[in-house]
Picture (tube, rainbow, N blue to C red):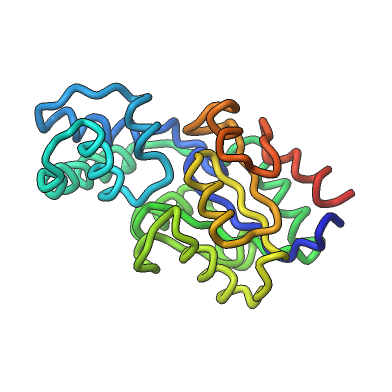
Length: 225
């Protein structure tokens, strides 16, 4: 087994959870409701993977706009997203549930981490009928740490919760550049970009991950040879 990985940390939306990019479409809508005109690709480029209030600030900064407006936009975003998620049907990304079973059967722990707050993350997990101890071993959200991505705090928390204390036993996978940066900042042995979400293969490669895959199920051959 490559590098004897003991913990795999996965992003949620776009990586393990297929929710049709509703978060970033809603983020785009909230920003545009405040009088701006941004495209979804712009929001993804500058906001993907981040705690969502920070994502709004970073988009405004790229627009050379006053970041203090982010507070009002964020409040609108939370209301819009709550309404969207109540009606949204979500599903696991292809092969993810199979991969989780394979990892856990090979004594590799599974952690989920996300730039969402705890409430939204829990809502997603409930829609998927995923429960701690079955599909995953730990959930770490933006509410659980002081510093969001690309700082390594969420991965450090995942290691603490799963009692995997050596970074060279950890894999981090996500659909955005900032996921890869987070994994590198945590000194993870393996970082993986997956093209099912925010960023393209070319964008992910620019962050120099260990692997870029089209499906997380490809990790079966990487980890379980």
